[in-house]
Length: 112
Length: 125
Image 1 (cartoon, helix red, strand yellow):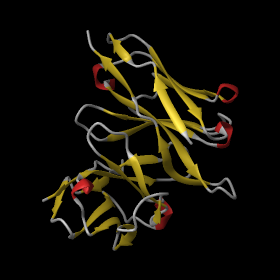
Image 2: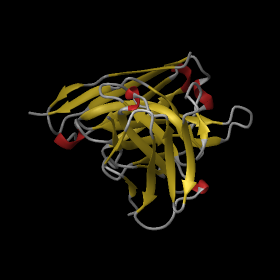
Image 3: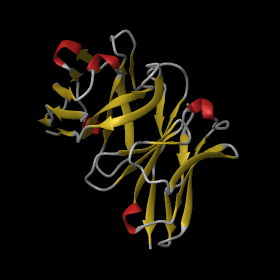
Image 4: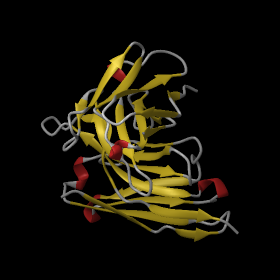
């Protein structure tokens, strides 16, 4: 079974830029997987950031951007702020059926 | 305003059953596929189950297949998850999530655009 991989943790300095990635244990991520990204702070429901690789959800600031980098999907945060310290999850659609949803394990981002 | 409100969680003994509900408002419920996603304490998000707008397509994670049943009542704007033969590893916060679609074509965009606040299920003796 294919696993969606994310860095377990990452750190960034305030004002800095960080890129989180979302890969596959076997194969490459492309736009056909419709990568999406979600932010979750402790005690809160997930917040949708990016869908269809690079489309920002309503109300999401433009310092969040999505892309394909090499063989992975990527979430880049430019000008990191303290309240960006959160867990970030990617989701890939592995096929065409309603069951083909796989979450990555999440990346805990620290801003310090 | 889109709202998804889960209910039905609680403490239940292993092997028993529980039925979760998700009340939807602020959008045309039967235009959208819906999903359940869970999060065990201190763990990541896990997709549990999904259902198309007309219940014609249904899917389950392998971890719950044969024990959980997803359903919806479009007349009541409600989504359900019947959970049977519960196990300790089913302990989690269960979120209801809407599947995003293109506003013009109605085609799925294969992501979750709105989430509820979750309902906690604890399976313990």
